[in-house]
Length: 78
Figure 1 (cartoon, rainbow, N blue to C red):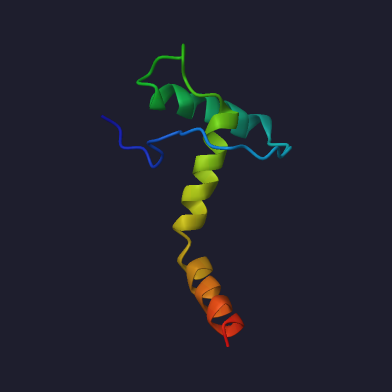
Figure 2: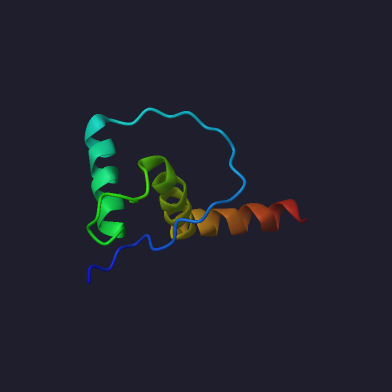
């Protein structure tokens, strides 16, 4: 079984955001959804459902962002 970085696509209260992505990236996201769905295209998550958890995971794993955020919070608490 392939270990993907994204494992859970949960629904939350959405905030509408419009972005444009290259067609190549869209195709990759469609493929990712199919793989995430066990190789079956029917019922696979749409790219729009994959993007938020991917960005969330990226931000959560960005160590430099976490350090800068900690410094910012510490300096604003003073």
